[in-house]
Image 1: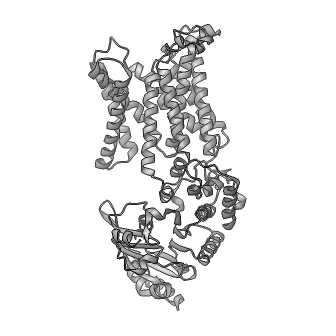
Image 2 (image 1 turned 180 degrees about the vertical axis):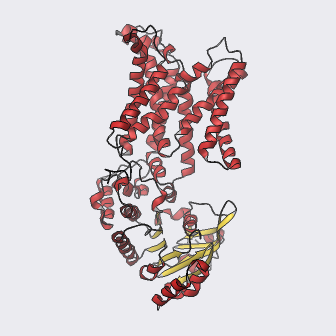
Image 3 (image 1 turned 30 degrees about the vertical axis):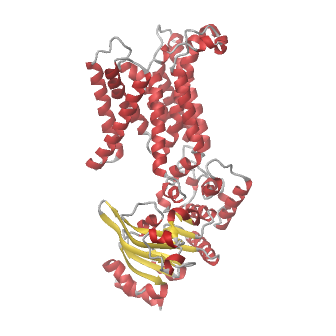
Length: 309
Length: 267
């Protein structure tokens, strides 16, 4: 494909997809090892009512009210989960499941009762996002990457998710050692002065920021898949956390690229008329990678399993 | 220092508190309103090897965790070498119960030992040859140097326990707190661990361990601390580890014959 066609139509959705996938996969590694992987799932569901309420209050689809609404909903969800866990005396996983499905359902109802026909806000959008529509109309070819005028017309989702990715990577890079130690052995971490409570909360907050920013650009399907699939597949490729992070980033990028290309061209290759949802295909590819890693990865064996002694 | 101790509510005139590697006063910890440890005082002697003994659920681990600030007490003060715990973190090494962590975690033996050098390395300090050399030396002391590159999940229980001990050695502490270091380990590991602990004592360090095997108390330790939610007895083994104190600690749970046997062994 020529640059004239690729740059305006495919470059930005592809980059946004890659950034969103990696921004979710990075904290996903730690959430997975802490048995908190469901948090990504929970956050991406509860942001829907938050975004709808923000829209109802402001009447416009604009980024900051939606982001604040999503963050507010995430905070309400965390409080609700904690309250149900304590009052109901049930395990955190169950409390999480109850809260996020209920809040998502409430969001769907709220959306149906609201006149959002004039704006692009519906359940489908929330689930699949609108990756394909994040095109860069001001671009005419590769040269546009150096043209300030054309760059001003970049879809705002791209710088937003890129900055989010940078922030997530910085957080993990800066707190790598305490994150690793407290994930492995929380008691020991406290005795050497690591504030494990604050660090755990910061990790969940960072995951929430990734989820909200990615949700804004690509919908919740990718968010849910990327928090779990690339880290889980990466775990089966290596027995070192450092390498696991690298593999998870590679798998996230592969999912985004292969998924985007397959969604856009796969159906045409098969002789069908229409392309399929890029978000759905990206999530599917990440699932296929997980299955392949589970079947062929070199570190599938676990402690106590035969062949590991 | 006297002022600090006074603020902590510890009588500054008490010389035993000033000198003690670990002094606990009026410690109460409760889970869901049920006290696990109730109003416990403990003064560990400098250079001693102290066993914390008591039946299951008696609050042994909780006492250790509260002393380390891992669980928050309802009340009570902890001083380490005469100063508040937070200021003395660098002088304490902790070996948690082996079962308290997920050994499937993607990391190697050497990486776990390097965790003991965290204070030295800081947030972003690079691991250098001298750090690796030190970690290897600690692994050598527990007989695990051949396993440095192994994934931790591939070790036996005893080997995992020795790796945890190597991590504590890397911390270069003055006070070592161990939670059931001999639980579920093989005989070779038990021998290796007790040899390391005795070498620590010889180097003037202080060792406190939660211990469950009454038969080895007199061989391994010179002080005991008997607890069953409350403190029942404490002191040198030959004074505090008697048939009476064991009966008081374990009650009906310890067969009289067993107590007689231990009392007999004590001579």
